[in-house]
Amino acid sequence: MAYKPLLEEDVIEYLKKKKMITGENIQAKQVGDGNLNNVYRVWNSKGDSLIVKQALPYVKIVGDSWPLPLNRNTIEAEALKFHGNFCPNYVVKVFTVDEDYALMVMEDLSHMKTMRLGMIRMEKFPLFADHISEYLANTLFYTSDFYMDPIEKKELVKKFINPHLCKITEDLIFTDPYYDTPKNNINPELLPFLKNKFWKRNYLWKEASKMKYKFLTSAESLIHGDLHIGSIFANEKETKVFDAEFAFVGPAAFDQGLLLGNILINYVSFDGKDFAKEAVEDYRNYILKTIEDIYNKFSEKLHKLWIEKVNDISFKNENFLDYYLEKYFKDMLGYASVVIIRRIHGLAHNIDIDEIGDLKIRSRVQQSVLDLATNIMLTRNHWKDISELTNYVKSFVF
Ligand code: SR1
Ligand code: MG
Image (tube, rainbow, N blue to C red):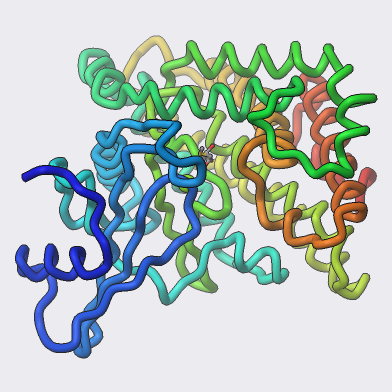
């Protein structure tokens, strides 16, 4: 079977042929606002529904001038399944993968919304910190050398080699935002600040390059690779991670850093919006508490796994865990800083800030976010506890 990008009617035919959906009045609709793929929801009159995600042979938001391999769909499906082994409650279920068509069929989670859509409206997710800390601790630990057999770990590295998607991250997160290139996507009102201040921060670029080097060279755990708040569905009771096509065996602190960075962008973004002051303060307190809870619960859970399940005798000691967590914490802050910066004037932004329509107001918020990220990057090696970060953030913007 030859690959072709499927339209809504093709997706219905495909699922009918595979007997994955039956019955009357089957319909399909393109959903999702991703940058790379086509995603369809398919449903029938009985209330059955499925999600089909198909890779395109190029970057969707740019077009066919930027080709991208189709096998990223299989890598994503395999990563979701592998992570799902260790935290089945917090990862979307993949039913089938079709390498020929570069597509996978998944459970439909449209009774939930992405956390980003909730957070831009100041919705709270009371169980999120508990759930995501377990996801972070389990995926980190069970796919690391602390737990895995060393031969199987190397096989895991091989299976999840994902060079083209990693290259996107290397360029878009660690490189392009630090100099004036047409690949960036810049609010014209922000340009003078970038030219006169931001791009003169050579000391910052050096720190970003240190993080890039770690990203290029650390094969620690199978990471999600793009764990922002648009890659997570959540509601009051459930949390489900999806969209893992950037997965590879990489630096363990990257996922939590990426999540933290995206939450901090949301925190600052309310400066440019019309919500009541008290509501913003209340929501910001909730965000800071969530940031602390995620990290503290994560380290407690990792500690428990360590005590109970480390297999390699070299690492079976808590002093090593202390060393590991100290490095993890600083790296997490470094990755948070670069992912914040990339979403301000790099190629792909977050709606948290881009929905601020007035470009002057947007630029003011963007400058504030860039200054916050710069300060986090430069201070990261002096902080030991997550409350030092949250106190600092509160003193910077509240
Ligand atoms: C060209 S792809 C831009 C971004 O979209 C994805 O969600 C990743 O975050 C990637 O960096
Ligand atoms: Mg994505």
